[in-house]
Image (cartoon, rainbow, N blue to C red; front, side, top):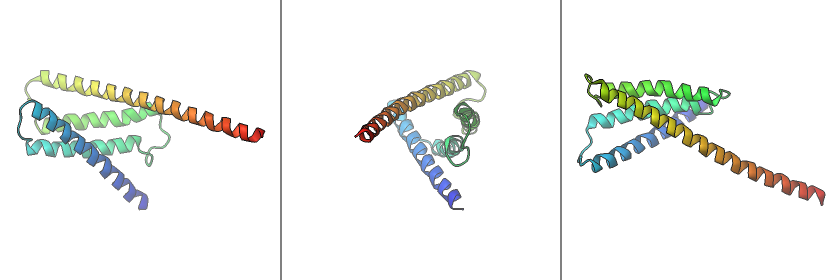
Length: 150
């Protein structure tokens, strides 16, 4: 029960950060486009998306549920349900016109590009962090060997 409650707290924290980020980004874009307000339905849709997306992120990348899955499979476990949630949210909250397929195609392409760019950014960040820690570990072993020689 303790682990379940800790997981809920982690998920709520991730969802809150995600929701806050969405609101900040939307506010900046809306202000640049001359909009003076955010429709309450959009705020609610951001809450749905942040809550569900954070759950899928927690499921796929969190350390509690899936511990030994390959990273590529984790990406699939996250990306597929998140895209379904994203498309369903866009549909039910009428982000795009239903009758015209052009905006929906652009929506799908933008979602795919954002996913690929973010995945590559995380890969680069993990590789850089890994190299940093490899260097620190190498320094530690070198100092340890020097101590043992004395």
